[in-house]
Picture (cartoon, rainbow, N blue to C red):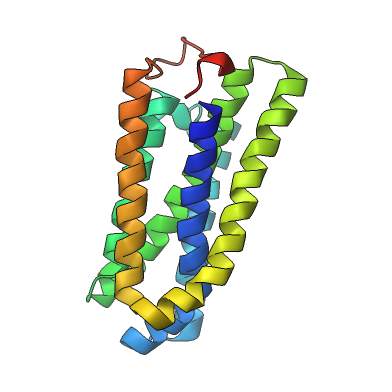
Length: 205
C-alpha cells in the first residue's frame, strides 16, 4: 500500500509539474489568454481544494469529516480521484478555452485532494507507529521530489518535441493507466475496504 501511494504521488506530481511548467506558454500560444487570468486559474484549483480540506477538518462542512467521506473509503478515493485527475488533462487539451480553463481549476483541486488522500492512507497504515510513519513519509517525499525533478527537466523538452496537446494526452494516458492498475492491485490484494478496516504496511503491494 505504501508503494502504491508513493507511485500515486509520483504520477500526480509529475503531471501537475509538467502542466505547471508550460501552462503559460501553452495557453498563451493556443488561445492568447491574458497572463493574469492564467495565474488566477492556476491557483484557483489549489485554493479551492485546500479550502475543502480546511472546511472539512474545521467542521464547517459537517457532512464531510475527511477526504475518506467522498467515495466511501480512502482506497476508493484514490482510484476515483486518479481517474478524474487523468480526465482533467484531457479537458486541458480541449480546443475550447472555457473547457481548458475549467479543467485547469479542477486539476488543481484534484491534485490537492490526491496528495491528502495518499497522506491519510499512509497515516492509517502505520497505525500510530511514529518511526514507521517517518519512514513511510520519507518514501512519499522521495517519490514526490523525483516527480518534481523529472517534470522540470522533461516539460519543455516534451513541449518542443511533442507539442502541447499531445503532452497532455500522454499524461492523461499514463495517469489513467496507473489508476486502472491501482484499482486492479487494490482489489486483487483485498485492500479495498471500509475505513474501519485498517490495513497494515505488511500487506502492501
